[in-house]
Image 1 (spheres, rainbow, N blue to C red):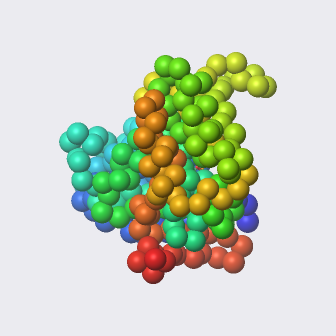
Image 2: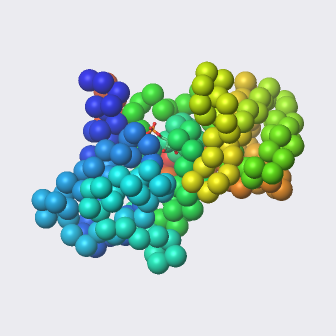
Length: 241
Ligand code: DER
């Protein structure tokens, strides 16, 4: 099996929890893509009816439009029955890092107001603690004086050996700042050590004027579906307290 086979298996399993008539949060990324494909397939086969999708990025919006999934937005549907989305990291308490695909703001807006939020991952996403992968923990910031904000973010986590880097696109070292769907920039934080209490870390980040949102999704996932060599594992929030 390839990693993409695992992603697809987790995605298809999650779609088993979708019922006709639901308002669905449609996630972003290579794993969520399989869930959106599967939902469209079941609609086409008549196995699902009356679904309304709320996309978490322009990319997912375009995918859903091309597949004929009826779409709406949070203004029209402020409460969502179920969201299915991937994650970059999942810790033992089902806290997540998301946003390496750049869609963290719209994902969090949608996934904060879901009755049920199913996270779909291949086993490579499991970590002992948030930031343990050494990969980016994204923070969406306003473009105005982003360097000022990046330095303040880095200083917040000095004792964890934090490095803050502007996400760029184009060329080897990237020439231009990456621009999100919301016309903001992303500063990626890289930690060398555990950042401790995640709620405190979250509050400290969000208190910085110039920060829009960060990629830690704390106490939000209700279910995590993990696919890997040993098969499929389903973890439910209430059991993982
Ligand atoms: O950027 C995001 O939030 C994506 O959902 C990411 O967390 C998972 O992307 P992947 O399924 O392509 O690994």
